[in-house]
Amino acid sequence: MLARRFGDFATAEDAVQEALLAAATQWPVEGLPANPRGWLIQVGYRRMIELIRGEQARRRREDLVAREAPDDRQHAPPADEELTSERDDTLVLLLLCCHPALTTASAVALTLRAVGGLSTAEIARAFLVPEATMAQRISRAKQRIRSSGLPFRMPDEAERADRLAAVRQVLYLIFTEGHTSTAGPDLRRVDLAAEAIRLTRALHARLPNDSESAGLLALMLLTEARSPSRTGPSGELVSLADQDRTRWDAAAIAEGVALVTRALPRGPTGPYQVQAAIAALHDEAPSTEKTDWPQILALYEVLERMSGSPVVSLNRAVATAMVHGPAAGLAALDALTDDPQLAGHHRLAAARAHLHEMAGDRDRAIADYRAAAGRTSSLPEQRYLTMRAARLAAETGRATA
Image (cartoon, rainbow, N blue to C red):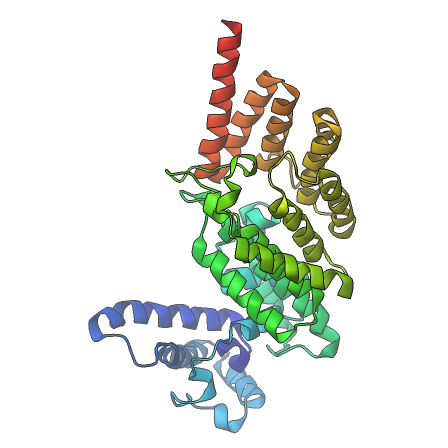
């Protein structure tokens, strides 16, 4: 809201941070205000004014604000105005932050950092780039917004499709980080996954005929439905093949299947719908062995042509192994070895270890599991990969003995 009013994203971010700091120190002493959101906006607004006035370009910036803001918005609004109401403006905020001056990748990265609750390191891992590269990308995005002179506003008809695509990607990456954390002691961040699903439901409710928004919601529901059996009693990761499928959320699966079934014929077909169809095939199968792997492989081939993502290519290689055998899957993985985004990534090493294990090559599987464990920042994944290597090493020792 401050960015929309003043047109200065970086200063608005600083003002909001200071308002949050003030809340963290004052609220425990003075008690929670009747309208916490309105309190934050009021304090942030006042701090924004102070920051603007403290700049050497105070007069120029105040003139800019005066030109862009109507006269009745020149003073802090009373607490009962629309801006301090309790309605959920998060989707509007996502659309505003996907600024027209930015490329989609930069808009998504900036929005994830400013709104989505992800750290720069988490965003970098999502984009398969170094953290320093992502930090520079976010910094340049802020500078580009400032230099463009374009205000934060809702998209017009010409911008709408691109802006929605960016918002969907933001929601997808928030959910992905929530479903499987890329770092830390926990496999999941339940708060992020739940918020991503809530916002995607809201997006689908506003755009019920948008097939990709329906596909994205279906994908989230079908993926999250497996969460009850993804971890063991001690929080350890349980692979898809070993999960107790009776514990999966049947209602979420039914809803997800219904969503993607309605969306696919309506078209146009996009990558989220294809991913949802893959997830539905996994969720409806009684076991890994009885999964329709040929259909999953065919869908990954379609998805690969749509997205060109190296992660999709990696998943397609695993599906190839399930259909044509581990040697074919390993050959497909070899083609990805020189991909700069996957080189040194733990998922490539983990996939190779899994396929070597399928092929009966324990020594290579052990080496790859250990390599994968050393490359991930997620402790549950690290423990899982280390235990797989240890189990194979123990079996190899018994066979040798």
